[in-house]
Length: 204
Length: 204
Image 1 (tube, chains in turn orange, yellow):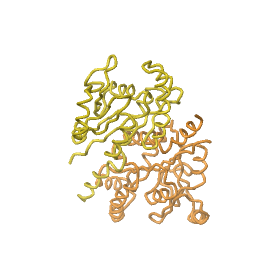
Image 2 (tube, rainbow over the protein chains, first blue to last red):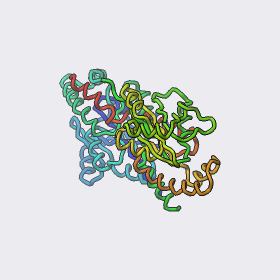
Image 3 (tube, rainbow over the protein chains, first blue to last red):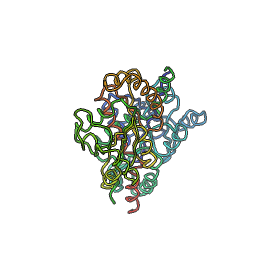
Image 4 (spheres, one colour):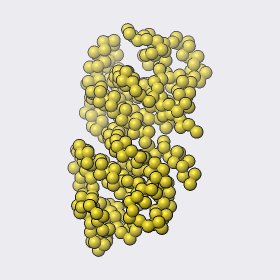
């Protein structure tokens, strides 16, 4: 019997740098987990590639998938849908490989309900002022949107309590190393390895 | 307010190599945790140093300490007591430093009851035949004792379920690295870091 892979979920407040950290992890290569690409109805930002950064689809297509139970999680955010197609995740886990999701906090909550044995990582800003500055620097939002996002961020940071681990995104290299450390450690958890020992003891 | 240190407990079946792994960890140095030296009434083996490998004390002195509530845990094993003096552990944790215990499974169970927020690591043999060979190789026990120990070992391996992590002692360097990985990861657990965020959010 092949051991099922482990689901790894990276989430955190909007603007904290989830995408950048996730890219750094996968750019390093040599990972033993597969990235599950999200699906969205928002327009690609400059430089974003379809099927790489996201699957960019129409609102109609996304809503069809929701109706057909084809999404592991999804969220509506600033008038757009973001979500994770279920099929790829299940097939990869069944093959014994780990799956890495990088998703919004609403989505992470849905995944927690459906797959509670996943590892849930919360990426946090060094402090909230720093978070505000990052959103401003991105230059894609006006001040009203920024204020709305800040209030949302405080609420989101409180949701940290529903996660297993918190990683501070201060130095990106440190954050990446910490995430890899957490994943390696989780593979050694008794709840994940005991089934193999049960087999061994059964043979004695 | 200074954060209290983390208690790290390494245990596992007798003969699995707990002492060797623990020594390798501390010989490497550069650890951010303190080793809590056990106390025992057994005679020192060749090369063992009082106050370094163990505190070697008389049966009377050990039993006095038990009566006075001075032991965090203790076990009687092959006519000898082994245990952990409580005072050093508490003082070190209060100072914000982590404490590392390397103890027998009976002792680990007692610590789990008294300090449930510790990190409990179970060191396992690659397989049970290997374990038997190790005890024979040590050459300090006769066959009847070895058989008794094997039965005990099977029961002890089942107690793995009461631990947080399982580390296989096949390659000692791998085992040491895994233990350090687990400790680093545990420092990032939300249950351990959230109190600091609560303070930060309180200031906004």
